[in-house]
Amino acid sequence: MTPLTGIRVLDFSKVLAGPLSAQWLGDLGAEVIKIEPPGGDDTRGWPPFRGGEGAVYLASNRNKKSLVLDLKTAAGQAAARRMVEQADILIESYATGVAERLGIGAEAMRALNPRLIYCSISGFGRTGPLAKGLGYDVILQAFSGIMAMTGERDGGPIRSPFSPIDQSTGLNAFSGILAALLERGRTGKGCRLEVSLFETAAAMLGYSLGIYWEKGRLPEKCGSGHESLCPYQAFDASDRPVLIGIASDNLWRRFAAGIGRPELADDPRFRTNADRVAHMSETVALMQEIVGTRTADDWVAYCGEIGIPCSAINTMADMLAHPHTAARGIVVEYDHPTLGPMKTLGQPIQFDGAPRVVRAPPPRLGEHSAQVLAAFGFTEEEIAALAP
Image (cartoon, rainbow, N blue to C red; front, top):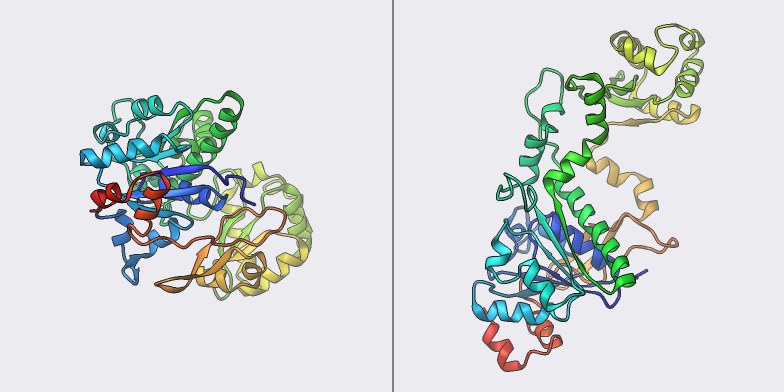
């Protein structure tokens, strides 16, 4: 399903949030042109490498064409303006004020093309005391309070290692762009939309802040657990950890009956989730005593039989090897013309059960420069003059 066929995207962004949002637009059929400076996206140089290309870059830039354009030159800026006149969407992630200095600021670009959807991605937003602050995922984990509540109770600062704020900011940009396309379909007008790592991080804390405002005190670190649910964490089985998530009183009664301890369902310390949270130390100690009597695989199998959410603490390799991963088709294999057989994670949406595919591999730096410029009406002489 490619509902964005015919939509042109100029992707001036780099690293992760912007490139991911553009990649997802490409997955839906948009023509995405990744416009890079002569040195390329930073992530091309992040190890590990396949044939000189960074793995992070390869994971975030499928279904795109690469054009090298030096926006620090008058000719590069003039070329960008010509392309904007024929584009539907522009995505940029420069530090505040840089897009304007490079001649592709929102006001100027929307004056050239009133139908343009201009998406600006930044660390802290384009206004406010920190508008010029530089923000990476880990900086916002620290700034927002996420890092202060992550990890074990007595542990030090812990970074969530999969860049959740960057990736979620990309999702926010993606959904905002889709909404703006719908609005343009009704009004004929584009718009400027902003997303920032700061606001993404703050929004991710929505229910945590709700609890903070209600209780009037900061949440404590709780490792794999949850301050509002119990038992809902990892426990040590006889051989390795296993996570059991009993998130309702019905599940608690089912678990108690299943293990031959029905009296636990009526114990006033454990009867309701609120009771179990109020007696969290006792509940966790009781669960540990029970879970420690069997292996992790035994618990996974048994909980599956009686309908209790449960999982071993898998590695990524364990997840990839599980037959369910293959059955869902989320891992997509494709051939790169210069790097050989590759794997990637497809878009986590299925339309009518259709298999996920990679329509175009992540491009080499400048691979499509001449082709793209020609499609935008540049002459051979103009294309040669723009070559880095």
